[in-house]
Length: 138
Image (cartoon, rainbow, N blue to C red):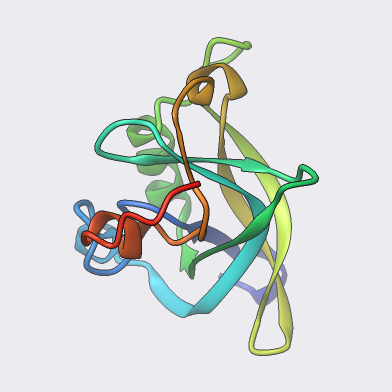
């Protein structure tokens, strides 16, 4: 795929390496680009997290950036339960994410605020750290 048409995704939860649903086990295989972060709030929804972007109390939510093919994006959409309308659990957002000084235009799956209401806020922004037992919350 030509450079200008390449699609990237930022994963921050169970899709991260060593996560419950490691993206590297999916097909077509993504290409790891590097680590990045977005400003937002990370919530413990259930066995998986949800990210809301921005806010005055935002922290750096860490994740991984991957180059993906359209077929993998379609698979991820299904996995994240993307639906048209306001009832979708996640919404697709496009953000530039810095990886080693280079900005990548990334797809980010942002949680619907209605789905994180009343859920536990993960104060440090790292799902892997949280899910491994270092349950630092705020």
